[in-house]
Image (cartoon, rainbow, N blue to C red):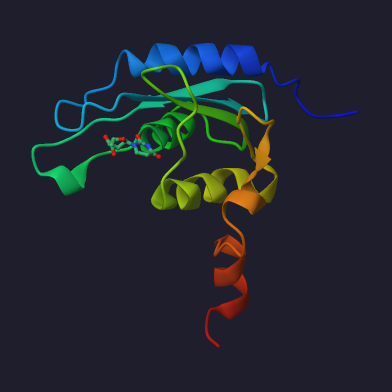
Length: 136
Ligand code: THU
């Protein structure tokens, strides 16, 4: 049946490789992310901090930008890791970013097995809410 095969080991490896590109002189927390798209591409990101701390870009922000820049589409599965190679929880803002491009079926790598986006962000506000509520 349809759908792309998810190579979790590859996603993890590529996410770890991205931590080496992170720019995190303020927190010292290196983060890398790699995701599989619906058409079989890999997209990647790393965190990029700023002297004005609140402007920090999370790894998932860079990944979503890579998604758009390389042709768009949907996120199917994602690995987000810290510099120690272990999964790190996506922050609240990034859950919202990922929901926009992956929806409730997006899978996040976790040591206990993949976690669905609708478990990470229950009752999410998304594009569908704009469609149904605009003008009401
Ligand atoms: N960070 C991410 O890159 N993604 C997340 O989802 C959690 C937090 C980064 C932002 C900052 O550079 C560092 O981790 C510490 O908060």
